[in-house]
Image: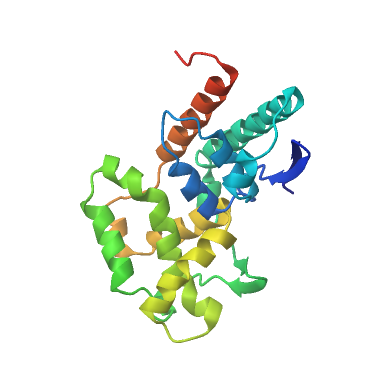
Length: 228
């Protein structure tokens, strides 16, 4: 369960691990600019609270202590993300997932399933194949939501595949799928994509180590400690 914290008399729920953090939240965190104080934005993303509401809170000595406690929680979350990407769990495909309170079975043998992925997914995969490892890290997370939206559109809706409709499904994936399920599913689907597999492309935790360093930078800056 998310951890309940209080900030200036406002109750917030902060995810504690990759099973509670959504892939959309992770995408938003990654988009935060480096070398800037984005503590309010980070808390807003994790608690699903409008950033203006966080910025408008009245701060005091007590709330500063509460803020430090929240930042400590984000550091623990970062550690859990890095740990997840260093374990086989990222390849443990769930048999079913729940999206918008609807449970759907995950196709385990894509060879006998309808050919759902459109040219849009092919383009995403081809783009990754042509990229350098450094370039792949930059687009890593965004690709996860896009690919899964196209693969899961048919089993979720039961409708005939339509590329434009699947594009609209991306935001649902971002809001509903946890990092744990999204990454494991993405690895599963991509491992079945023969042309992609031949290129020996796999997902590495480097982007999340970068996220960890960013969180550390913000914490040290908030505490007035040099990161050097």
